[in-house]
Image 1 (cartoon, rainbow, N blue to C red):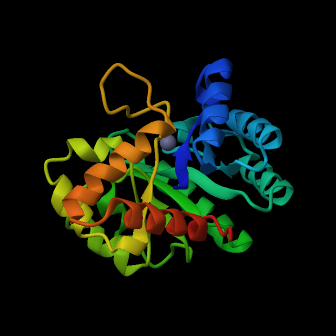
Image 2: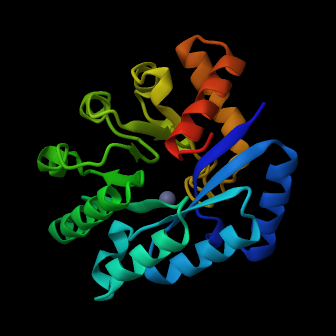
Length: 247
Ligand SMILES: [Zn+2]
């Protein structure tokens, strides 16, 4: 069985630990890992990991909403230069975090990412926390291909995302959602993606998350959807390839 981790921050592990993850992933049939960069400084690290393991790692470059106040004047030109150097790269992680005090500033930055995603025709990786109301004026602006990463919102939020053909990516955090079953039952199978968000959002508090929890997460989702584990794994693998424009 093949797996793809559709959202990880490999550069945020200790280097030896990240190397171990990559080696183990290759032996366990993880075919791709989407490594997301969150700031200008971070992009170079993502690029280095990509150069080192170009068969496995698909890079993504973006400014995370938490970094919105720290962004340099020339960030957009720099982002475009990475996109030109890495034609397989996606855009993100970017988005809006309503728990921070500057959502309007984040929104402007996010819109700029959307415009770049459209210009370069790249999928967009969206971080949205307490942000759904900000999207009222954004739904019609989004690029053709986008995903809400580590979705952990409400069942009713799915509707708008899915009506715009968006993908929903789940990490271990969804298992703590009181509506877990309802949420995973309400996403069409072709729109489900899975991620570790490693090293963040571990299943067990105080541990470090890795891609190797994905099969476990898949088991929970298959059970909630009352479907076959292997069929689900295969479909999600196909969805992931399609999302990253491979295959
Ligand atoms: Zn992330």
